[in-house]
Image 1 (cartoon, rainbow, N blue to C red):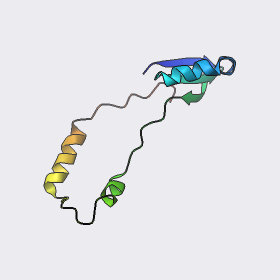
Image 2 (cartoon, rainbow, N blue to C red):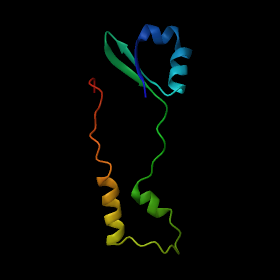
Image 3 (cartoon, one colour):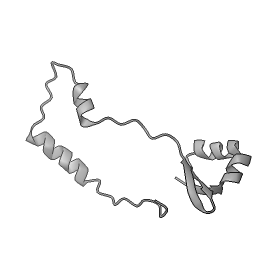
Image 4 (tube, rainbow, N blue to C red):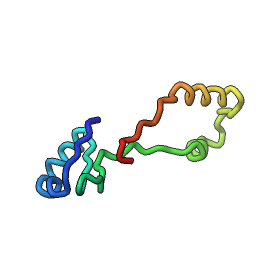
Length: 90
């Protein structure tokens, strides 16, 4: 995802252009005196907690939360241990 930095004045002058960039998948950082004051990006997909997902299971579900399931979850987490690289201004 491309990130664009623009001033408040630029954002106010061309808000439709800013929104076009966001719709195209970019992140737009609006700055005042080179300090970020807002970040615009497309909404993130909705997520559920594990508790919410379990609550959605039918009462007669044959799913079992056993040690094998726990190992599968741990393996999935271990496979995605990419470091978090937040922007420098965070």
